[in-house]
Length: 258
Figure (tube, rainbow, N blue to C red):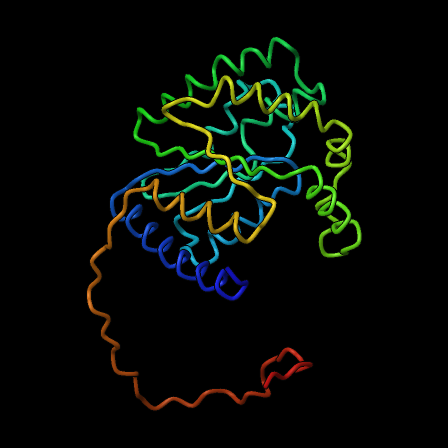
């Protein structure tokens, strides 16, 4: 598939995402989409392509920072549950409660007891979510060592992407095998029948986005929502004199196109 064909297919899939969202709103479905993976795997970029044409009133993207001191004293899942969807809403988690099984485990930010409790509780919580009617979709974007290295170096050179490189990201490179082991153990406990992990080959970003979106559409049953015909009313006409244009503060026209 050429880049042009990939862009055309993305546009087609984005229209389908709009139809899916309309059905979710129409029927009051609740959808949670979790995106996990190594640094530079493309989680944020994939979410951007998914939401590009969606109605922002009916979706949220959750990308939490490190917990506050107060949040550290709460039940671990508490701050994530607070962001779960209401009826007719989609919530995308750009990283999620699985931080405990990844970065917190590898970097020593949680105790062994906290980690073991997570592995016990997480499958039970996710089964409860599914039983309650929430559609829970978990995606792991898989990127190779070589491709991650290339993306890291590209970010270092690009001023528009340099902010994506944190010290924690660089430390992750030094713990490549530790993260692989943590991911495998996480899958062993949390790749459950009710909410399985869906692994996406993310070395090719364009293909990964198309594959993930296509799969997402197949996992949410939706139909076309009937729309009333749109009738444009006649433009209002009455006597009114507007103030002169030079009475307003205009943005300087530094650019013209075409």
